[in-house]
Image (cartoon, rainbow over all chains, first blue to last red; front, side, top):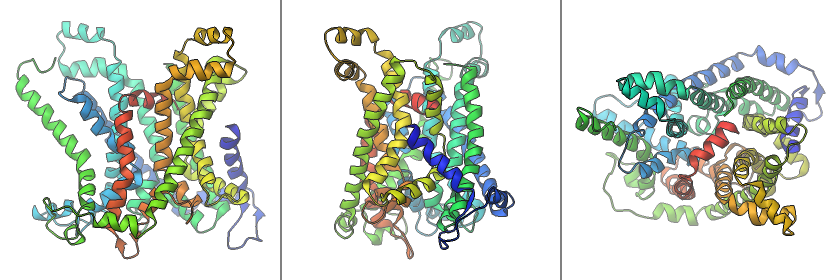
Length: 269
Length: 278
């Protein structure tokens, strides 16, 4: 396991120190940190990072709030809750590429069912995936469709594992539902929620499939996150540079991961 | 609890209205894809959107007979099956070691396994590509299986540790006193008791492989292409072929839906173990 997980990383690190462009296989030269230097000063990398952050900060809070809301909804008694839960989970396990194609069908500017009814309501036919700002919104929404169930599930499981006593005490004291949520549920679930959010932050930084299929990073570079930029650099044959970008992303994600581990360490379950 | 308070009726109605909204949001895209696959092209590309129509199987016929879809389906199945078996077997053995023995650095190693889940796939795809190139495993099932086992392994290991921890070690010891070797005790006593864990680990491993796109895109070619690459390939230069795509995508989705129904009971545990911890 060490071998198959660690070796690629070390290899990547080594390659990132070379100038290696596929069309010129004879001209592979050790250049040290030069790849990193040119990346850090590259406006495309800056824009890619910005896009990644916008995507991450768009999708994760949305998922969190929706997932939390759904979990609270399911905390009470609901008829058919078990079957409903199964249905709600579906998007999480559907192949991301399939999910993205599904949404392309819905959001098609001329043929899509969404735009047909928007036009009927006199709201025009927005180019969901064709205008820069809207494309980012669409990508975020589709990603949320796929991952809200994750938040729902984690928070739901947390809610079910909560001790009864604080709620009974709150009921005796005549607390309103809002007070119960704010002063009992939220503090008890704080760490679990933080964990779920951190995991999703890291996943959002690593997201590739959905964006690739929906927009391919476009229009132009409006939704080109670091991951898609990395893929493009690789596709152009800049092996050394692409690996350097991978290592940089990894460091970025590792920082988040470090925060996560500190969180686990502070509260060992 | 909530329903019995003052204004309970109105609140119940509100709750169910919310549930209805959630269901439409979740299910409508899936419903629309499946029905799209049953429409004629004329209906699919026509406006207004058709809600009632006579289903036809023309798209399925095209997908199944005009393109080598069945062989891609087989590719996906082969890769997913071997990934599942490989990661469950290796994961169980590794997890058994962690659950029953503490050795120098075993805690650190557990955390390292957890860390590997956090690595961005794009960061790994380049070294894998170069490694597979060197080993001559590009565009082979083996290459993809190796990559996917490495993805699924951390998860199955962490999941199985939790399940093994719950099987009392005394049971194994009793079996070993009766003459079983340690491996036989694991196979005959512990694994059957941890069977739900094995099932969950297997389903997750299957889905990892079935759903994976980026590595399949880069490591596979004509001979080993898997389904997500095929689906994405319906984005052609003349625009997406929605009719064929929707039929193919529906077929790809069937195993996912079946497995979600199976997983549903264990999924909270799977996610809190697998996602939250590893």
